[in-house]
Amino acid sequence: VDFTDSRLLRTPVFHNKLERFIKKLTPQRVDAVIASADAITTKTLGNKELFHYVTSYICLAYQKSPMMGGEAVYVHMADNYLTHELAASIGAEELKKARQQANRFRPSLLGKTGQDIRARNPDDEYESLYDITAPITVLYIFNVDCEHCQEQTPQLLEVYEDWKDRGVDVFALCTNQDIEQWRQYVREQNLPWHNVIDPKYESRYHAKYNVDITPEIYVLNADKEIVGMNLKAHQLEWLFNKEFSK
Image: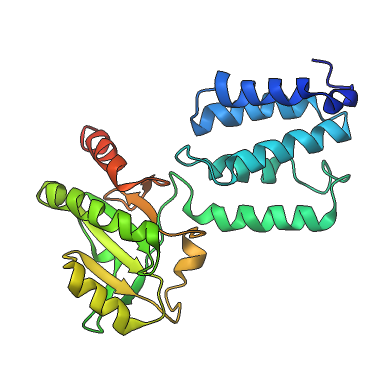
């Protein structure tokens, strides 16, 4: 590919090659994708149009990716390429939005230490995520009215029942504002884990963990390092087995 020829963008050739290289030929692991992204992006530095196209494609592809921890690719691109020096041809407002998005992702990337959340339980007493001493903690952020949450909660409950005696605990944070509705939901669903709610955002959980949709599942190890994210309840057992085998 001639990375000096922006006419390629007027054909399907460049996009198809880029997509195949990034999505098919590159193992879908954060380190591998970042290496491939660097290899391609650095070749486009001499062509503003290709540079803009490649950086936009990779950022969009991993802004919300099914790959666990894919947000780290977005942060890497924003930090290393979406700068005023390299991306002068990209509008200032677009760069600003990209930086803001990267900063939302940054605190809760895979491998980062998950920050504490302190919120009220159904008895109106404070509970802290850091108070949990289990080898594995599932941080489950959900909304009572969310249809996907209503599907995932009973599935997570099944997984919890199988693993609670093997070192897994759950800290379930509700994003609803209606405390009584949440209390009723906890009772009706008979949720036995740590249930908390923070309608006034006292814990600032929204700044500590990326919660663009619900439910969100983060998995933390004994050191509160984030070892899993972007997961569904049925995928947790695979991760638990992996972590306990270390």
